[in-house]
Amino acid sequence: MGAEYTEMEQNEKNIHTDGLLTVQQFAALIGKSPQSIYKRLNKVDNPVDNQVVNPIQPYVVVVEGQKMLKIQALSELYGMEVEQPIQPGCQPESEKLSTPFNPVEQPIQPPVDEKSSDEVAFLREQIRHQGAMIESLNKELEKEREHNREKDRQLLDTLAKLAETQAALAAGQNAEKQKALAETLIEGQQMMEEERKETPETLEADFEEEFSDETQKHGLLQRIWAVITHK
Image (cartoon, rainbow, N blue to C red):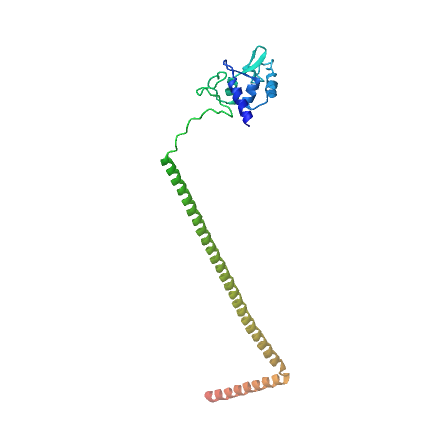
């Protein structure tokens, strides 16, 4: 790791004053292999509609037959911050190149406002408290619902027992009525049977006796009338 870090530092120190990088230097700074960079350099633009197929191509410069890359490609293609070209053999503090091994110093973030932090903590506590209240209310509501369900079950049981009692009473009353009707029918049937047992002679004797009495009554009335009329 130390040898690699030394090589990276050497690559940064070897950047030309005119802002050009060799393929090896460029590849080392972006963490790619030189072969992949050469492969991209060999791609050409689309000659039909002048569409740029290889975005790195505009940054290629040929110096004494050697392809080199402009240092601006680091920032414009890879987002690496570049301030000024680095002089060969040195790297001034005021002119630094952002690399994985030597990043540009970032501005110090301002401290968080303590008042804002307290407000955030207060709001979080309020949210937590409200959440606890909602949970408690939900539990109370569930208990009330269970209590109502129990009352409904008790009411249904009471209604069912009342219906059974009414049905039993109705059945008992019907039984009493049916019993009384049956007794009446039996009594009537017995009376009819007793009347049938009487013989025709008995009926005839009763008729003659009643007729004889009527004749006697009629004769007595005639005699009384004769006395009254002096006949």
